[in-house]
Each structure stands twice: as structure tokens, then as C-alpha cells.
Image (cartoon, rainbow over all chains, first blue to last red):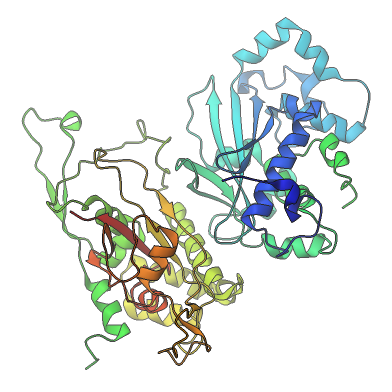
Length: 255
Length: 265
């Protein structure tokens, strides 16, 4: 399929079927979003945001570093960071922390980059169990809204990955109760990834359209701002944050 | 006695259907030297169907000679988690997947996610229980609440189409096609519609019409299967059957019709 996003409404003018997205609007929004992310340092450090040109999805990969239980108190420096979710004491997310530090303090100092230059820090990191998180944003054929799929993979650890792993290491504490209290087994479901066919978790999309009408202005919203607002609604609950640079670049930080 | 071809009778036949299964251990999994006895079972059709087994059986039986299919035993330790969702002993994962699927069908039929939300908590869990226990009367009572009355057409018809597997491949990922399918399409011939429910200038979308629109290479004709035929619940579907009627009387427990495309010849 050829895409001519400049000619498509999605990039700059209002959406044709808000609160729903057409396939073309979604594909172009992903494409533009990934382009913007490529020129954004924080997004690149965040494991990379990229659009898949063949499948029309947006992919984000990041690694969450998990401390071994025995050394839980060892790394106070990391634990004391303001951005680590309060009860995820055993979790630090190195790349994501970097992005969040920018968010929280908007500071010029960049502690993570210093650590990245320190070879010893890298060696230490590699010995710890880490969780690799692959997020994929795809358009639901049924609901005509984006759906956030994600898969988890342990490195340096052979534990199985289940829903409990998701709530323990991925969902920030302030969202846990709210997410777990809905539906049969909470707002996060297990299913098969629509493109790869592999088992994946996803945030259930059935309330997305309603939620979007409540928070976004139909007259002003474009494909890209739709994705940003949607990521704000859905992404945070599973620890996916939009780097501030990208949000500001869209002029949509106020929504 | 019901008309033998009434929607209720068709639905009852499907629920009473059974799939003969022969379950055998793969030789590498067998602990005995020779051969482990196979296990014969014929679970209720409707029950296995909701779990995707029905579609799988339709897909695997694509060849004229019905072959046997070997599945591997999976224990917790060697669970193929890259390929299969790991189920829990309380059945929550399956229950959740069923309800998600029911919600999707509901959304397509009505254009909103409200239908399933209006079900009481008892009916909501009762729907899954009815499927688990193959209790057709409870199932019908609850699903009537979800379905628009026969006089009111669906907004879109919940159909997923499974494409044929490559000939040499015994197992593998089934490619699924899904697209919004309204129950009526504009009438190109200008003839008066046969259905009193459709508005002027439209006619009911048929299985053949939908397949031709979505898969023109496999279905070059709307009326006659040329290269492939559509299979549902082990039976070949008539190309002229209106899609909404097919789904109203022969959907799976979750409200969807999973139609398997089987190559001919």
C-alpha cells in the first residue's frame, strides 16, 4: 500500500470519524509520530519509537531493570529517584527513568547519560535480570481505535511471564487497583498479537472511543494529537510514556 | 415442531453437534517403548467451538482425505509460551477472552459497546457458564438481550475469515481477515430488494458477495465457488446465504461466525 500522508487529512486537519480513526489516518499518524521520534534524543534513548511500514503499527521497545531480591536495598541511588513507582521497589527502568526525569524536573542535568558513559555501570546492568518490554500500537479492526499490545521477555532470568509479572513490574502502583477492578480479570487481557500471532498482553480498547470524546476537542484533533492524547490515557497505565520532546514538538502538551 | 430450517432449529443442531477427536501422544512424548494408546473423545460441538477448536478442525480438514493431526503435550515446564497463551487453572484467561470476543461482536452489531454493559453481572457470567455447560436455553435467553430484534438489522456483521494454510504446512499461523461488513449493500441492478428490512436500492449482502469483496482472487464469482469454498461448522456455506442470517442462526457462542476458506481440488 502506498501512503501519501501529506495529502491525507490525518496530519493536519480534523479527523473524519472522531472518536474513531480510519486505517489511513492511523497509518499516517504512526508514520509522522515515528518520524518525529527519530529526531528526538529522548525517544531514541527510550529504546526507540519506530513505525512499521509494512504493518502500519508503532513500536516501542524498552528494558526494565529488575533488582534481584537479595540486593533489594543495595542500590539506594536508583531507588531514591523520584520517578520510580512507589511500590515497585524492585524495579528501576533505566531508559524510561531518563525520560521521566526530564518530565519531572525538566532539568538540564542528565545523570543517566553519565551512567551510560561509565563502562562499569553497563557491566553491572547486564548481570541483573531485565525485562524487555515491546509495545505495539495497532488499529483495532473492530473498534477502529488504537490498541496497545505488549510482550514481556526476561533477560538473565527464566521465570515465566504472566499477568502477575505485568502488575508487579509494568503497571505503576497508582493504576493497579483501578486496572484490576474491571472486567473478568482486569483491564489487561491476554490474547494473540494481530500481526505476529504470538501471545501478547493488551489494554482492552472497548472504552477508548468514549474516553477520547471526553478529553479531546473534536474540532482541533489531528491524527498525531489523537495518538498523543491516547498514549496519555492508555500508555501510562502500563508504563509507556511519551518523551516530552515529542509532545512539545506537536504543540499538544496542553491537552 | 419447529420448521426444520428455522434459525432456532439450525442453532440447536449446531449446539448438539460433536467433533470426534482422537488424542494421541507424539512419539517423542511417549514414555512407553511401543506406542501409547490413543484417547477418543467427542466433545460437544458448541463447547469446543467457542474455544477455537471448531475453526481449527475446519481448517485442518482442508484436504479431501481427512488426515490426523499431531499435537504435543505441554507441561508447565516446556510450555511453548512464544506460541500459545498460557491458561490458568481457574479458567479466567479463557473466560476473559470469551467476554472480549462477545464485546467485539456486540460493538460491531450495534456500533457501541453499550450492549454488553447493560447485562447484569449474573447474566454476564451466566453467558460463559451457559457455553461451558452447553446449556442452550440459558444461552439463548441471555444472548437475546444482546442481539438486536430481527426487525432491526445489524450495523455490521461479526465475521472473521480464516485463509487456507499453505499446502505443505501442517501447523502454523492461520491468517485471519476481518473488515466491517454491513448486512446490506447497494443494489447495482436497481431491482426491488427481496428483503422487506432493507431500504430501497439495497439488497442483503451474501456470503459470496462478502468473500468476493474481501478476497477477489480466491472468489472471482459472487455466486459460484471456483477456487475455494467457505466452510462453517464443518459444512460448506451457500454463496447466496445472507451474511446476517448466517450469523444470527449459526454464530459461535461469542457471537462471531468464523468462516474457513478451503481450497478446492
